[in-house]
Length: 64
View (spheres, rainbow, N blue to C red):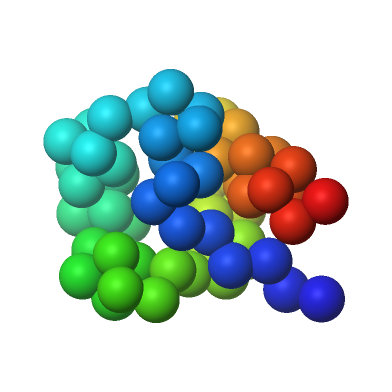
């Protein structure tokens, strides 16, 4: 089952939206699509970014 990461997970990881926007720009990810639909955890994992991995962990916790 693919977990969809949402803004709530970024907030749960104690990260700010301005920093997240910069992350999305650096990795050429669609910020608006993320806000409206979320993105699969694999997108974040593929970046190898420590903060992205923290966000994925929060999304997994949210899904139980």
